[in-house]
Amino acid sequence: MITCSSCTTINWKRLAIAIPITTIVNMFVLYGLFMNPISQSVIFSNTLDQSPKLVAVWNTLEPVPQASSLLPALLITPVIFSFFFAVLYDSIPGHGKIKKGFAYGIILWGTIAVFFELFTPLGLFGEPLHLLAYELSLWFVGLVIVSLVLSGVYTRKQITNV
Image 1: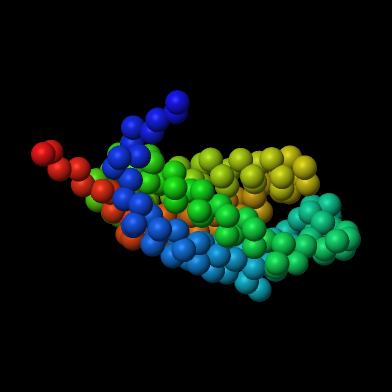
Image 2: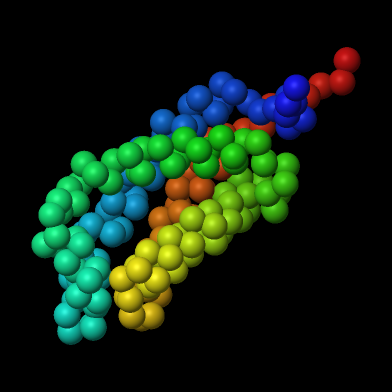
């Protein structure tokens, strides 16, 4: 039988509140950071030597990604990382909501964004390093904001000794 020693301290009610809030914030912040006209002009810029392969995947190769194709990632991943925030709460560096949220944002950035950007845009599409750095900075800002919101909403269950 598998047991979860930290599950006794998970505040399931707060997690149930935090997940939809985090999901909405994640959707708007990351979508807004990457899909706004300025970011789109930078990311898909021929003058900044963007990889033609990456541009083709997003703009010409059928089926061309639609906003709706991004929804599963924008909706499902915050559910997963919110749950892990609750499970790992005591192990996340820092005391207080801001420090824990910032630390968790860095953890997410290092595990999600860096892997994705190195694997897909750089490894598969040959994206230039300066555009990779730009995208990683967008990921950093977005994941830190989302993690700060998650940390602000979620509070660990307090165990009282009887």
